[in-house]
Structure formats: structure tokens, C-alpha cells
Amino acid sequence: MSKNKTFKHLSLFSGCGGMDIGIGGSFTVHKKFLVNQKKHIQENFIPLPKTKFETIFANDIKKSAKNFWERNYDNGKKIFHLGSIVDLVKEHKKNGNIFPKKVDILTGGFPCQDFSVSGLRKGFDSHKSHLNKLDIKNQVESRGSLYLWMKEVIGITNPTIFIAENVSGLSNLGNALDVIKDDFKNTSHGYTIFSKKLFAPDFGIPQSRERIFIIGVKESYIMENNINLTEEDLFPESEFASEKDIFSDKELHPTSKLFFDNLDEPDSSSDLAQQSYSKAKLTKGQGQIEINEKGLAPTIRSEHHGNIEYRYKEKKFGGKNITNSKLFQRRLTVRECARIQTFPDELDFVFNVREKNGVSASAAYKLIGDAVPPLLAYKIAKKIEKLLLKYP
Image (cartoon, rainbow, N blue to C red):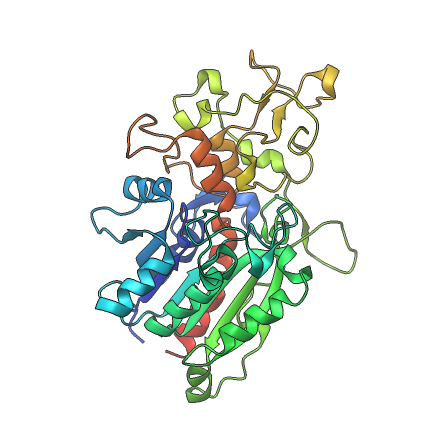
């Protein structure tokens, strides 16, 4: 196979591109998030190599996502398509001018609000439409059924492999996961379906994030190459452990403090994303704790934009983290949340705040919380890249 071989990637529900950065590689991460990358490298943050995947199409309904892509990724290629996946599929079926005819891999984290334990858990009976409004005219176009429209795009573009991601609560909401897997299996070309719940710290991301990944591989590809495909061929193996096991050589989960290496405090930073943080007052309920520097960071969620956890709390409120800043109590900044999700610092998350093409701090929190951690996506991508290179 040619060394210059690339695989075409189509991204749905793209948000700020966590899955897409990971799929493409070529971004920086802290060396302690990677196994066997400590002793011989002096710099704390090191670049990951580029993969063989190239993103040629991205989509999201949020204008903030479009603004983010055009600021950070597009480079004049105009690969981002703003709009509901429902409307895009309808337009393509009418005129055939939206989606590329053939891609190698398709990814999408379909909306999770209706399956999350922190939501109303209406599942397929979502109370919101595909436009995220209350006026549902057709249940198959509801927010809880958008995976079916992802299935439609799979049928149109005929990828060899697709990856769907959602919250872990999907697995304990009746038979929702089985229904979704069965629907994906019966996509027009026929797919063999694998699914696995992945815990981010097991792959070097010190954040208590757990998500379900569904991977489909085209049955004709498996048959033509006579592949005895197993879960191990598609999902990365756990690299870290939560506690030391004398029978294992795995290192312990990295701690959350590593995320904040070399970050200036908001009052002395020139980075607008580091200057920006929620000013919500301390109350009761979710998001009122101080981040544990010696353990795992909290899961960064999209609904956390106001009550995001504290970086520092005053000692009288139970704070333990030490700061040299004048701000003895503040919540996590936008940049710190991006770091926790393993986004590289070169991405602008807050810009042109009062302009139509800008992204506010509140919108940035939401985009970051919705994303797949790029480092986790990268480790999945490397497994799939190996398979596609072995059986082109």
C-alpha cells in the first residue's frame, strides 16, 4: 500500500471537533497521558503524529460550532455544513448535492440529552424536535431519534466503518441500546456491530467520563477480506489502572493537576479562553465542588456552562487547592475545561464575543462539554487505522 494513502472521514454532530481532532491526530497532549512517554522526553507537552484520516465533511446544527470550525479548522476548505441532519438528508435525497458519495469512516455523537441520567430520560419519546424545539410534528424527527438520520447518512455514503458515541446511561434505559444497535446493523449495506463502554481515565484522560461507543463494520468488507473480526481489533486496550495491582504493570491514572501545567491564572493570562470563567455564585447541587487535583477531574458536561466546578474554593467553604492568584475562589475557566477534555491550546474557544461569527464563554463551555476527548478518539482511530491499512 502507498505510504500516502489517506482515508476519507465524514463527521456528524461535530460540535467543536473533539472526535475529529482525535481522528486526524497531529495535536499536543501531556506526556504523562501516554504510556512509555516519560523518561526520554524533556517537554511536558508533546505532539502526536498525524493519522491517515482526513476529514472532508463536518456538520452541526449549532451556529457556535460553525463559527468555531471556520476559526480553527477550515482553512478555506469550507467543509462545515450548518443545519439539522434531518434537513440535510432531505435535501440530499431531493437534489443529491450534500453528502460525498463515498467515505471510508463516518463518526457522530448523536444527541445524548434524552438518554442521559442527568436529563429527563425520555429516550426515543423525546419532548424536543430535531431542531431542539418543543413543536414535534413527527416522532421520527425528534431529538431522540436523530441516530436514525445518522443511519440514513451511513446508507448514502457507504463507509467501511462508522463510530457512534453516546452517554453511558444509554445502556440502562430499557432496551434502548439494543434497539439502536439493531437499527444500525440493518443499514442498507449491512453492518456487523460492536459496542463498548469506555472509561476515559483508562486511556490517560484524568476525567471521570464514561461513554458508550458503537462501531459498525461493513459486512461485505469483513467477508471480502475473510476477517475474523473481534472487539480487540476495534477498541483500544486499557492503558492505566485506578489502583496498583501487583500482577499488572499498568501505571496509575494520571491526576487532574497535570491538566493545568504551565497555565497562567486568569488575571495574568493573555488567552481569552483562560480569562473567561463562570461567575455563578456558590449554591447547592451539581457543580459546587472544588476539583480534586490529586485525583480525577469531574466529567465536563454541556449543561455545566453556568455551574461548572470550582478550580479554587475558599478554605471556609472546604477549599483545598492552593493559589497565588488574587482570586481565592473561582470556577474552572473555558481553557481549563478544554484542557480537561485534552483539546490543544492552539484552538481559540472564546473570540469575537459580540459578533455574529464569534463564540462566547457560555457557548464554548457547552461545545467543550459535548465533545469526545480528542485523545480518546485518537486511540480509537489508531486501532481502526491499523485495520484499514492491513485490509485496504
